[in-house]
Amino acid sequence: MLQKAFGDNCMSRASVFDWYKLFKEGRERVDDEPHPGRPSTSTDAEHVNKIKELVLENRRLTVRDLTASRCICETTLSDYQDFMKRIITGDESWIYAYDPETDDQSAEYRAKGEPRPKKPRQSKSKIKVMLTVFFDHRGVVHSEFLPTGQTVNKEYYLSVMRRLREAIRKKRPKLWADNSWFLHHDNAPSHTGLILREFFTKNSTNILPQPPYSPDAAPCDFWLFSKLKRPLRGNRFDSIEDIKRESLRSFKAIPEIDFNNCFEEWKKRWQKCIAAGGDYFEGDEIDLAE
Image: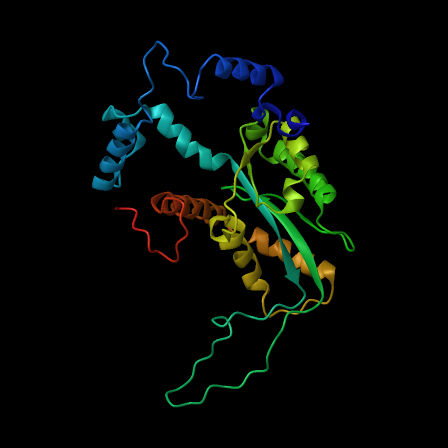
């Protein structure tokens, strides 16, 4: 059962017996025993700190500059830079037939001493449709709308994953060819059910974990959905089809550079989490130069 759900991440029956034998013979640690050969130094503490010092001294350093310093190989740094380009992230969100403007959108000029105008309280409409979208540093890879009467459960999300894979095959053929892409989504039950884990294992899908209760570390939450919905706010749409059409139009208006900048911002947020030691923090309290 465990191997069926987790595949290569689960220890095999033979390995369990091997470890049982080793522990019975007196072994007390699970760490690798010392072995011959030159140890890897590119990621040890000394080299990592050296890189940090060099970058903080000169934030314009290139991969070639760091390689010339002999503290790490160019391949290692290139792999890290390319990693962000292999992530496909996604989530779901409701799009409304009417969504009130934000305070800054509805702000009006007032002369000095002029009373604040009274505005009727606005609320979201009951007519809505759920959008599911996946994107990378270049743009939207796959999007679809939840059919009327359907709920986002494990079975539905499994069908979404099949359509996402087909979209990656067509739109990102290089990532598809070597299966080098990473899927990033949140930990909702519909995303993590057994049938999903079996599907990901069967297709050798690389999953990028999402910290729980951390929407500020998810690109859909901290960027895409607000970017998509802003031009739609304040408009009244007459039908679900109108909502879908205008949502897709809003998507197409987002330039590729904005997606690229989103991933750069995401990387900065990761760095802040690392600097905070994994603890929760608010705002920009973390100084990356420390």
